[in-house]
Amino acid sequence: MLKKTIVVMLILMLAGCSSGLSDKHESTEKNSRKEAAKEAKNFLLIGVDSRGEKDSRSDAIMLARYEPSGEAIKLVSLMRDSYVKIPDYDKTYSKLNHAYYIGGADLLKETIEQNFEIKIDHTAVIDFNGFVEVLDTLAPDGLEVEVTEAMIDDMNLNLASGKQKLHGEELLAYVRFRHDDQSDFGRVDRQREVLELIKNEMKSSLTSVEGIAKSPELIKKVMNDIDTDLQVDEVLALATAFILNPVTEVESMRIPVENSFTDKMSNHAGAVLQLDFAENISALKEFFQGEESIEVNG
Image (tube, rainbow, N blue to C red; front, side):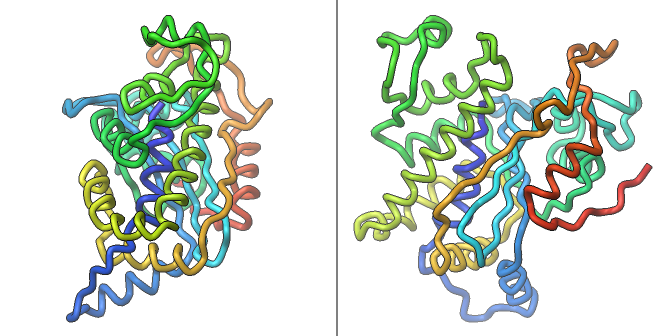
């Protein structure tokens, strides 16, 4: 659903901040953060199913790994129905997206760290309104995707099936669509597709003279729609690393990996995915190439 929001957020944080801002009186803390930005970082990117309401669930959950010395961003889609242990939750286990509902980004981050043995450095959150604004800002002419008859009926589009250009609200419906035999798994695939398209849009925009000139205004507008714990100097340091070592590839995977889960019913959570955690933790570590695990409590 909002997973493409994910890539938008990451690419914005990494590529979009070449605004020329500077601080003549940088503190030691800021210098330390800039040095840290040169290291590999794991981001938790969250798309929430709300339009500003207080209570919401994470509709899209993705981990992104960026290594300033590398040429690829690695994206991992975490299925929201994964049955996980939530810290200090009275029923102990529930769907992964329930962690956000009861404890926001902090609890979701802690839940992922403990269940999948991975350290998360930063988080970023965007809701439906923000997603639509971001897409219309980054791709004002729309993005071309494959639209099926089922999508047209579900989204009430006045279009023919096949390749069509969709815009903000339509793209939101496109990535959230799940009324076919692929269900949530199909949504994950479409989220990856839109992320790749957004990456290409950003690359095209920021490598042109006109795009570079407009980038400060563009980034400022987009960042207004994103809630992140990154400081401005951290964003700029990451942007510098990105410019010096441009990302040319987006690698992706899904958790749970194939044949590593079973469909189950929970009395309190409903239909869930029961994961083989050992297999999925191993796959995640391998994908992130040597990512150090953290100690899992409990």
